[in-house]
Length: 284
Image 1 (spheres, rainbow, N blue to C red):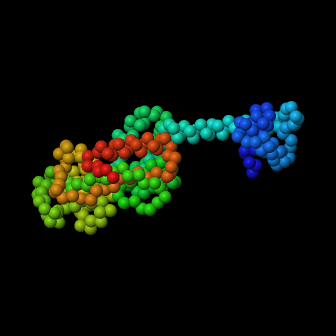
Image 2 (image 1 turned 60 degrees about the vertical axis):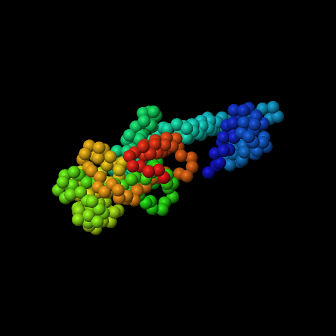
Image 3 (image 1 turned 90 degrees about the horizontal axis):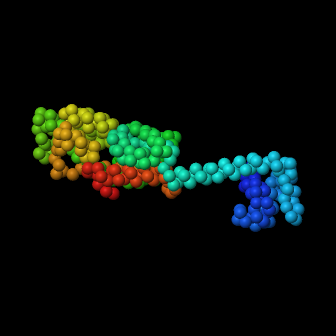
C-alpha cells in the first residue's frame, strides 16, 4: 500500500505553490518534499507535476488526483478534530457496566454530568454476571470486592462499610442478638461470595438480598450505603453495631492507562464525588 503521507505532501505542494513553501508548511526540507513526490510518481507510474525553475504545473493525471488528495486531508483534519473533541469535551456514547445494585448510585452520580453535557449519551449495562468488557466496548466498569488480575486500570472509589441488618418483624419473632455467639441461632441471608453454607437463602443479587431481609426472612450483611434509606424508614434495624465487619472495596475499571477521553474523566470524577458522600463509604 502506498504511503498516504506521499499524497499529503503532493497536495500541500500544490497548495503552497512551490516545494520550498510546502517544506516550510510541513516541517520538511525542500529536497525531502521533492523526493516524496518523485517516490509517489515512481510508485504510481505517472507524472503529477511539471517542474520548472519558476513554478510547478499540474499534469492531467495530477489534476485528477488532486481533489482526492484534498478530500483525504480534509478527512484527516476532521478525524483530528473529532479526537480533540473526545479529549477535551464529554461527547458521544459513554458505556458503563456495573452490578444491578449499583444502578441506584450511578443514576444520581451521573445525572448532573448528563445535564451539563447534552451531547453525551449513556449506555448503562447492569448485570451481576461478569460481562466481557472488551466485546461490550465498556468505558467504565464498576466492581465490588476483590478483583481478578487483568490489563484494565483499577481506580479505587472507596470502601463500603458492611453492617448486619434485620427487619423489625424478624427481631420481634426471633429476638435481638446480644453477642456474636447468638448469631449462630439465627436465619441467614447471604450472597454466594460469602460462602455461607449455613445460610437459609443465598442470592447473587444484592438488591434482592436486601429486599428479602426487609421482608423479615433473616439477617443479612448489607452495605451501609445501600441500607441507609431502609434504616431511615424503619424497614431495617442494625444488629450488633459494635461488631465491625470487613469493608467492601468499590473500584472503577477503565481500559486505558493514559489518555482517557473527556467523557470518561468527567464520569469518574462524578462517581468519586458521589461515592465519597455515601453513608458509610470509607476512603481508600
